[in-house]
Amino acid sequence: LAAWWIRLGIYPERTGLGRPDQNGRHERMHRSLKAELPLGQNFLEQQLLLEHFRHEFNHVRPHEALEMKRPGELYVPSNRPYPGCLPDVEYPSEMVVRSVRQNGSIKWKGKLLFVSEALAGERIGLKEVEDDTWELYLCDYPLGRLGRGENRVQA
Image 1 (cartoon, one colour):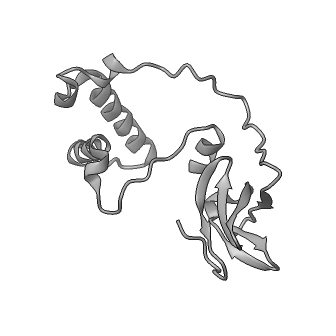
Image 2 (spheres, rainbow, N blue to C red; image 1 turned 90 degrees about the vertical axis):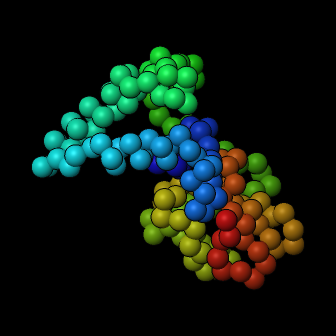
Image 3 (cartoon, rainbow, N blue to C red; image 1 turned 120 degrees about the horizontal axis):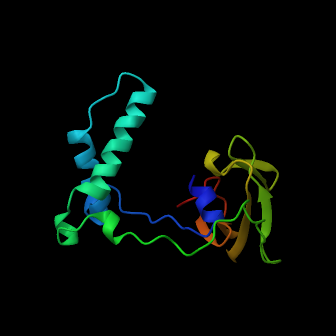
């Protein structure tokens, strides 16, 4: 899902490990969800329960953090058009481009290098930033760095 979003120009925000305070709104929603949502008997019932919770959370219940307004009152749809299909990924000529295999690896210097299964089927760009040190990108989003002599991408 993150790769799809990146291809649409929507970039994930990474929070520190074990730092729920960096994403308080989302964590608070999860706390409410866990406390209030019963378990359904099957997938369909669970989905209906989730839809009911979402409606109540966004349109019925006021939120202190929103000065007792409901999220649905403040929501503004994006003016960015949604494309019917994902745009092709183009990389600058100075980048080396590799296709990610179904197992999440790329062919690099005669060997297979694991990148991420989440990128299977995607084309990624590698840019040399120092002598034999490479930064990996999906579109213009940095994925990590591959240092000289390393066989593992570092985030």
